[in-house]
Image (cartoon, rainbow, N blue to C red; front, side):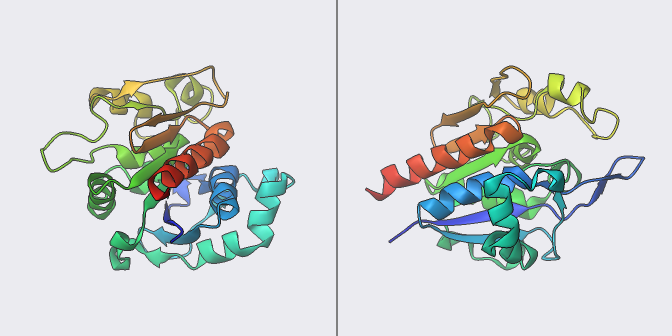
Length: 226
């Protein structure tokens, strides 16, 4: 049976005191989606509230995979995301959290999201995140009381990248927060493709890393499915 992947997206559309418009960054959902689709996986969407989520970086729509996502089944299904608390996550082999600034608003402390990630990880499922989506891994505690990221090689949008992007808008520095919970943080050159696998955890640094996260998640799922 082909693996099933649940993509969990933010419902936020503004961040910071200046109400900067935000959402899920298009290539960060479209590029992994393309990899899951090529592998012929079942792909479903959930959001934290069940309301229609928002997309950011629509100016990148000329990219073939972004355009295919927008005009095909991807965006259509994302708009009809289920409410995460109403999804039976036991039906899924993997969860993936794309970035954009939006997850920094509603994902740092969401109890339902933390429980889902811990449950999937502890039953040997694959957990993936890219860019600011890695904030979903923050504050996830396993059954033994330790943080999920403790001792794990991971990456996310870096301090250097944030300093030149949205420092005034984000509530905290993601690289610092993950490192404080014991993550072994791997930062590559700013804006370069950088994705990392550590066990069943796959993370990517920025939009350029999204395709690599999708590829690495597929490789893990295929190894489990063989």
